[in-house]
Length: 129
Image (cartoon, rainbow, N blue to C red):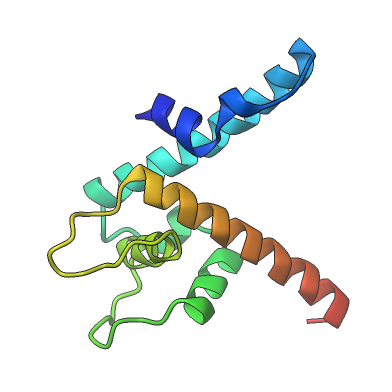
């Protein structure tokens, strides 16, 4: 699964880097990203009631709270709750009959969340938030 995330999510094979040092640096970064996606997916399956701060920053939690609407009956703010929000950013429909989100949809959602969180941090610096 880790290798699939590295190949399909990061698209490591499509890089156009020409030196071994640059390729090594890129793959090192991709390994960290792939591990995070895989770890979050497995964490949700093994400890869904964990606190969200275990794997998410305060900025990521704040962005998810503002960006993805909660279901009417959602009261608990567990890691599983926020993982579903990340998966919804990646295209997960979160229907009652759907299986838990997988690595691919988590990759897409986490990629979007990272971009939005970076934009929020930079925008906060310019606006003075």
